[in-house]
Length: 225
Image 1 (cartoon, rainbow, N blue to C red):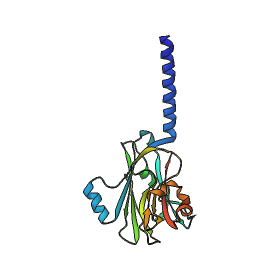
Image 2 (image 1 turned 180 degrees about the vertical axis):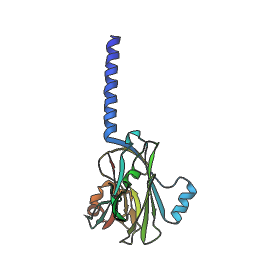
Image 3 (image 1 turned 135 degrees about the vertical axis):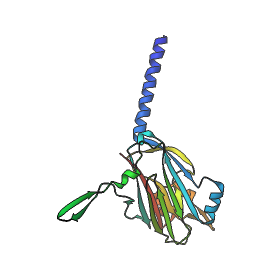
């Protein structure tokens, strides 16, 4: 009887381990935190209308995978061109040196946006300066930083919006593009009341339909093999 129980236990353990390994191959845990670490820094950021969202991973199974962020602008319910912030792939530059034609192979910029062997964690910081009419957004990877500018088209106050909970920790799929952050005005609920949190109740592609938002920008993340 004891041997039967032991064998059943081992089979269950093997099945659970197999399921866990399978889950980890097509998903990974993500941690999203809003704001800065220190209270005084958050107070200063609020004064100058600056924001920060940190997206973190600590999964060794992600070694070699690239973290591709793309941006799409929505205008009156229509999704404009979606484009990755950096195009992956190696490019070459042709240079004439004397009588010779030399091909220089440029490194793949996306390699700097990949989880590497020496990384104990991988964090992406999204910082936004809202102090001007044109927002300045910096996306900082461990080994490369990008800056983009977004013109505000409405009189509402635009802000970065985490499309998960305020401080979220859970699993997301790999090799699948998902929206993680939006830059948008709030939903006007009437009587002078505006709300950002309610936006996440509906898919980002349908915010114009449900919330009458004529303009906003969505950032997508895809973790690629």
